[in-house]
Figure (cartoon, rainbow, N blue to C red):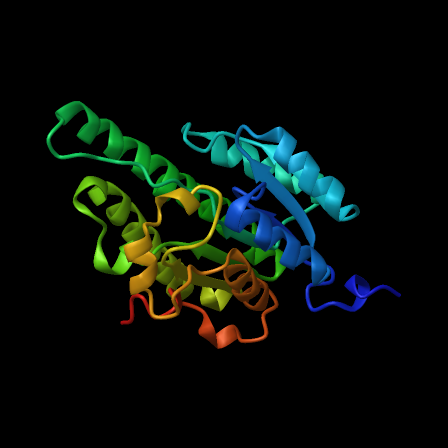
Length: 251
């Protein structure tokens, strides 16, 4: 018997959106290590998704889908279900920090549309799919990756991003309250700066020096939290938001 065969997530079937790199890839690795069967969703980087799947070997599938396009979420959900037979845990990780500058009406409008679609509506559509399926399966878990911006708002050029993430946070709480009696658990994780390929060049030295731990949060820290919540070992955390900012933002 392998470690995975007796891991805390053995038998779990999990969909991770945006799972081919960055935080998503770290999440996939942690879930797979703990015994889960995992669907890696990716948008355009099939090479990265296949490389991760090859690295991990068994119990991994990959499914494409552009969540910036309306209607993709439902197709993705069905493909993930077909790949594993069913899904009992949804990790809404896919997202992007899209600008919505006030001084340009066109970019303001397109920024709001893009942020709402990718960072809120697509995640909400996947939540709806889960809420249709999970009660009949005896329950399931939803973990939404939001942001500290959901609490404090974002900067002047990214107002729409903060608003979208705030909406996702509120959605998570509503799901926990409305569907707990049907066995559905819902959690939100709100990271601050996380060390990924996309963020590495954006973190100025003065920002780094101002962080209480003097370092950016490793994606593995987020992944371990996701793995713990996926295990169901603390069911009464449902409805909670867990901040992971290295004390950079403390509520």
